[in-house]
Image (cartoon, rainbow, N blue to C red; front, side, top):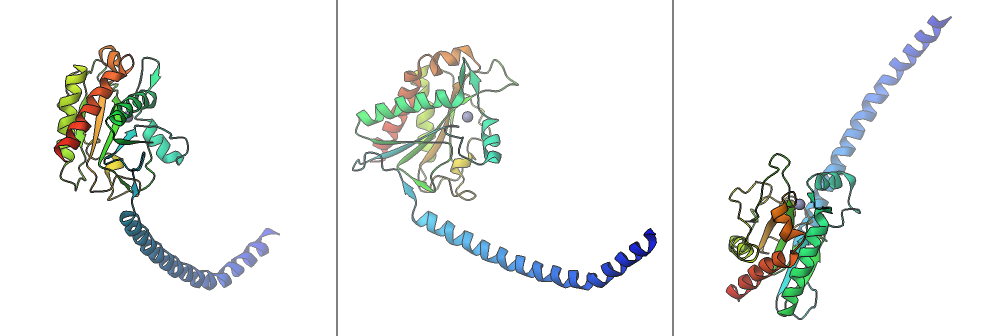
Length: 254
Ligand SMILES: [Zn+2]
């Protein structure tokens, strides 16, 4: 009973085969065309984004515009793949999650800079586009499960810098943060710092504009009680270090 049905299906399948082959080639060609158009469109969007960057404009009319990126802040709205990527790196300690500590330091830094007449914008983990400012500093706190007693801070310049000033900014951050907090400066800089995603305008359309001097600071280890005495208990000291570095940077470049 079953055999004739199977044979019948086999004949139908053989009969349909040429149709599938030709449809397949047609779809392949169409896909290739769509892909070509998409790539072209992507390049056009890219060019437009760089020609019309989002500019830091908090308290517009100010001479200087500083952007402070709060590490891991406002991750709820972003695609889940990225959320997982960023959240896995987030430090915890002293009853705090990293973004809370970063936000507190950034707000206090902003208050200090605003007192000096500087416009400050606080940015979330995902930038609103290709972003242009006079200074960009990403603020983070550290944790290393492999080194539970690790202590200290470190700042690094963007590896994608075309302003020629990112290194100067990172040097000032290292110097002034040490003076303000008395924490040790770690000499080892992991590659994830200079190649930080928000610096990578070559790859992402949500990154600092290449002409914006950009640096990242790991303000200390949330896992270490000595560092937490600054980060959690006295964030004003951390803010003082970052604000002083930015003020000196702007002064040296005016
Ligand atoms: Zn972080």
